Amino acid sequence: MRILQFSDIHIGTRWRTVPVKKWMGKRAVGAANLLAGRYRAFLDNGPKLEALAEFRRAQEIDLVLFTGDYTALGLEAEFVAAREAVEPLMDARLGYVNVPGNHDIYLLDVVRDRAFERHFGDTLHSDLPEFQTDGPWPLVRLVEPGVAVVAVNSARPNPWPWRSSGKLPVEQLAALMRLLDDPRVRDRFIFVLNHYPPRLADGARDGWIHRMVNDDELLAACAEIRRGAILSGHVHHRYVVQVPEVNPAIVCCGSTTMAGREGLWVYEIDGDMVRAVPGSWDGTSYVLEPGAAVEL
View 1 (tube, rainbow, N blue to C red):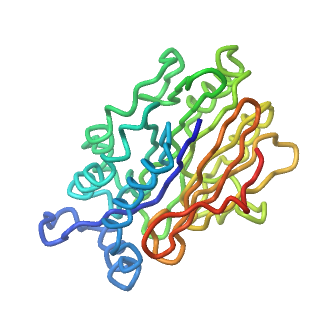
View 2 (cartoon, rainbow, N blue to C red; view 1 turned 120 degrees about the vertical axis):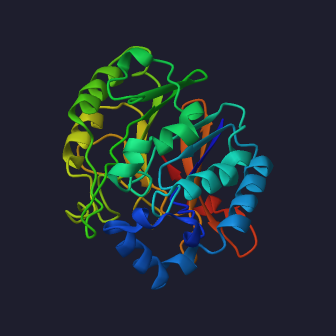
C-alpha cells in the first residue's frame, strides 16, 4: 500500500470579486501580509498541483491524505478554486481523507457559512460514525487489513490578526481516546491526522500564538498507540520527530506548494514494515528521496 500526504497549498483568489464586508478586521491584515510578499510563494500552485496529480498516478498511490489549509483567507472563491485544483487527487483507489487548517476556518463567517463542509463534505464520511461527537469528527477510515486513519479537527476561528492557534475540542479528545482503544482500531497501524503538529522539528512546542494550545493532551491520548504516526501540516517545513514516552512519531508535511519549501511524504506499507519517504520539487516535478526514508 502506498499513501500520499500533502498539505498547506493556500489557494488564493482574485480579491476584486470579494464583497467589501469580507475585508473587515483580520482578513484585511492577512491580505496585506500576502501582498507584502507571501502570495508570491504560492503563485505556481496550479502547475504544481497538476504535477502532484501526475506524481500520484505515476507512483500508484492508493490513498491520499491532506492535513489542512486549502485556502489563504477562507474565502468562498478560494474554496471553489481549491476543490477544482485537488479534484484529480481525490479518486485514489482507497479514497481521500482531509482535515481543515486554520486558514480554512479563518473567521466566524467561514464556520457560519459551513464553507469547508459544503465544498468537502463528500470526503467526511466515517467507518465508525458512533465515535463522532463534533460534527464529523473524529473521523475514522479502516483502510484494508492493518491500517486505520483517524482525523481530528483542531482548527478554529482566530479573530485577532496576530493569532493562528488551534484547540482540539474536549469532546473530540475524549472520543479519540475511546476509539484508539477500540479493538477494530488499536491493533492496526494508525495514522492520526491533525493540522497542528504537537511538536516542532527540535521537539519543542510551537509558540503560543501559533500552536494547538492543548497539544500535550493530544500527545497523551496518542502516547500508547502501538504502531502509528501523527501527521500534520501548518509549519511550512517538512520534518519527522520522535517525542520521549510517545510511541508514534510526529510527521509534518510542511507546505507542498510553497516555493523553496515544497514537501510531501509517501508512506510505503508492506506487512509490518512502514516507512515514510520524503518528496520534494525539482523545478518541474515532484520526486522522492528514498535515501532519506524513515522507518515508522
